[in-house]
Length: 183
Image (cartoon, rainbow, N blue to C red; front, side):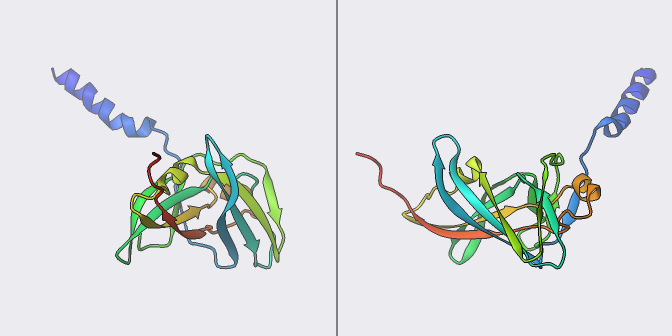
């Protein structure tokens, strides 16, 4: 019986050693590089609404980002002057509602890099089906805030000094009216 308990104890302590955890990185929002998110106007029957994220480099050096960044997202609704979380997802999230720092977890992006020169910008197009579903009004008139987040993972940040060292966090605030049920 003692042998079984000893083996069980050894197995329980060995579990955390064998589990592979991805590196977690906490970053602050950018001050010299800005981003703006708006709907692009393109709709897909399966993916929903497409969003355009315009990244402008106001820093004195060239920065790099993946050509197809993996954005984290957060949808909040306005209730009596307070924002309440409705849904969120993706590899980048806020530390908390009161803390502007972002946490990056998950697999590193392997897409080719895009260089953005000082005083220039680049537009990224992305479909976020889960975020689009969360932007459906549940009241006659709903106010939503869609926040998109991107920051390089720890592995990507170490691989290239031109990688944007901070996080992008553009927001889009929109009022949406609930459509009447079809007759």
